Image (cartoon, rainbow, N blue to C red):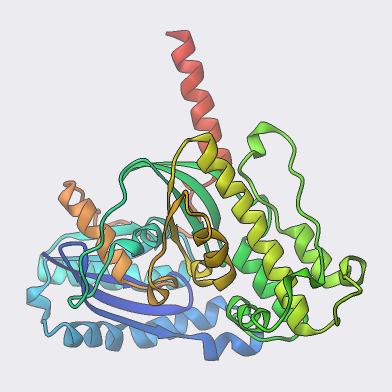
Length: 358
């Protein structure tokens, strides 16, 4: 079964064809970074207009690369949540239109679930990936999200912890913007950090109180320390240069996350972690995690860490096999509640209260 997926949640216009939920027949990603670079961040209006301009040629290229026509596609999928409203509407509307025209199923996909699926994909020249056994811990790290979740089954995800303020990728971007290092900040800082020493500065770690914050992270303090209080945390033995700052900041940002992730693994006695999202490409994060021989960390290849449509088509196949379809009146949702820690905790408490009353 061949599914054409579309991704337009932020600043990449992407289309891909995936066979049987695993084999990537084509994967086209048109990035808008050059158009947003001068603003040091994504401008929603520009993003929406570029998606409108690029969606048709990108889909055509994906079909051409796969040596297929629309009649060869068995279903169409698009990310409809969460993301930039205008951007999401472009991809969702386009995929729904194709599905209606071809009289084929349409599936609306959660962007965050798609990232956690990326490591299951392979190209025709690669061996199929061994899928992790449930339950496992999912780590989703990107510019907009930082989530530690317990993946009990394909359709059963429990959020254990999130950021209470900035996402890790957003923090990289903001620090990079302040120092004029470039955009996107994660890639720039990662490259600079390779030439610096992470011991050059010792930035403070967040201290979140209460069991309800056991797996939560916070990045506002680190961001403030790196931007406004850098001298206060600098180690006088090292030169105060950009490379050392990048290395020390990156180490602290990753350690905040890794400490909470390992705590979740220990508490739930789980030794498999699936990582997804743009920050999954960060070299320091990968080094910290893979140095643990007692835990199996599964990363997507670097070209599937960022937003792409192959992971969208992969998730769509699983949902299609589960008998799911999306209604033609399905629309875009810029925000969702199911991946918020507060919502999940409230639902667990509500269910617990119901159980106690019965």
